[in-house]
Image (cartoon, rainbow, N blue to C red; front, side):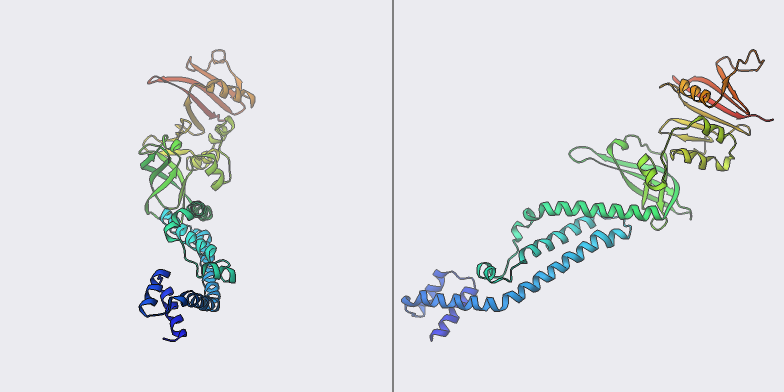
Length: 376
């Protein structure tokens, strides 16, 4: 073998990942003078470096460009495109998939960045992704990616829901809650869309809110007409403000005056202008706000509305004072020869009559307020 052939042979052995001891042993078997080993090895290494400097810059730039394009593509896909579709199902799986894609892409962009420079080629050659340490290296950025992607899916679904919302009354049929290091709770509801489809949907809630739900409970919700599984429960001020652009409030005396003149068909709409907790109970024929434990009955006669609320927390005194503040006057029923229950207090203003009565039943004390528009 001539010198060039020997050097080429050493190059092949180095590329085959043989160490210096193995290469020298091989050269001895070929009866190469050991005194030439160092010189031949240096020439082989120089030839390898020359080849690397010719080929690696282009290869490494191409790899860096490909991984950068993939990083940008996955960022657009999981941060904008998929969330913009309003996807609500399998978002956890998609978030995990997006986290893996983005983490791998970012890791390779970081590895290949600047790898085409001479000093980096001389030192590292062609970068090798540390597959064995990938989980450790990508844990922190992966956690951030998962949080961002999950938030994007949630925001995208909320945006679509707000733009395509429809109102419905849902029934709670199931739920689950996990409390510990990770707190997680969901409520499963069933409702009918405006086109007659029965939909079963699952909504995330806080473990604190979960305690207030029960099977068979009626809830006002909004759903997307594009995807009825995209829903939100109108159970708090944040949701109502977000989708209905209004703040929920307590019912006031002026509301009762207004409701006494509202037709039965429009009563629900008027109640939901006050807050979105009012749900009609078909079997009882009443409107119920379970959160505040209040009931508004369907009127027994025209121009009358009846409100029942738990007594306590000053309800009976507060409401009476509110009626006085808007001009009602307490009347003496005996002097005016008006037939009334001894436990009943009556107030009057212009064309309206308001009566207050405490009713005790099943160890509960309730305040009943009847507002009636008087006929002229």
